[in-house]
Every structure is written in C-alpha cells, then in structure tokens.
Length: 235
Image (tube, rainbow, N blue to C red; front, side, top):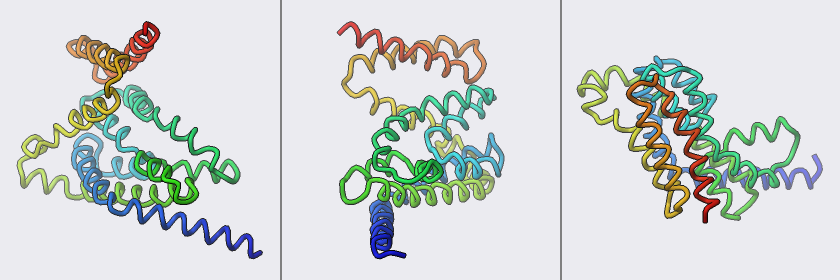
C-alpha cells in the first residue's frame, strides 16, 4: 500500500469514528424508538418481520407507517406507497451528499444505506468528509434501532401481558403522536405547507368512514401536494 493510500485510509477511518462518536449520545433514543416499534409491530407483523424490516429497510418513519397500515388490515400496496411518501425527503438528502461520495455504484449504494435524518445532519457540520461522518453516524443508528426492535419483539408478549396491553401503555398513541410531530415540523410557518396539510387531512377524514385501510393515506398524499402547489403559485 502506498503512503498516500494509507493516509487516505487513516482519514477515512478517523471520519467513520468521528461520526460514530457524534451519534453515540443519540443512540439511546434510537434504541427506545426501536423497542416501541418492535413491541407494537409484533402484534400485526409477527416476530420475524419487524426485525427483518429493521435490518433491510432501516427507516423509522416508513416502518411506523407500514406497521400502522397493516395493523388496520390495509394492503401491502398502500403500505408501500405510504412508506415511499414519508421517505421522499431522502431524495433531497441524497442530492446534497452525492458530490462528496466517491467510488463506484456499489460503494455509493452501500454508503446510501446509512443515511438517516440524524446522520445527514451530523455530516453537514464540516468536521471531516461528509460521507465518512454520515456512514459512521448511520452505523451507530442502524445498530441501535435494530437492537431496539429485536428487544421490543422479544419482550412484546411478556411486557404487554404483564402491563395490560398496548392501549394501557399508551403504545397505540405512538403512531399518531409521531406523525403529528413530523407534520408540525414540516408545516412550520409556511402558508402553502399549511394549506397542503389541511387539505390532505380533510381528504383523509372524508375517506375514513367508507374506504379500506390505507386508501385515506393515499388520497391525502394525492391531493395535499396539489393544494400546496396551487397555494404557492397564488403568492
């Protein structure tokens, strides 16, 4: 190995470790979120699927959305579309990270598997290669989330039986509270975003009484962006 290659390797390892150290304090939150997902998802998805999903998909918002729809006997198509919709923000993150990514298609694909909201934010701090920081932080987050999911699944039956079920623990409120938080953050003080959110909510509420589970979400996803776009054009 040439000295230049070794130096690049050392800098890469230092970047990964720096990202991991930055993410470590937030890892406990990922563990707890994973436990909550594992406990609730086990009821509708069984013991194996939530863990496999955390390993392969690794997206809290998409996994919560998918499990929520499946728990209401929604279709796999509705669950998949909802997951894609809530994960659309990763397109923007990917665009900002793309210039810093190096290597062939396979390497860039592997690197992209460690993009999370937190790892992306940490990678923008300018304390090293954004890609190295992102991968290091994302690795910690991925391990914490998957471990939490496994712990939640394993302890789900015992915990729920001992404490009186998901409703008594308030776990049935996790999904609404989680997505309400995301909605508030997304809307902010932007009038067009508010119009989009209210229109989508109205469409979903109108469909709930007679539409199959999952379809209200798809309807909301269809009309909300259009309403927001029209509101933005009228400014």
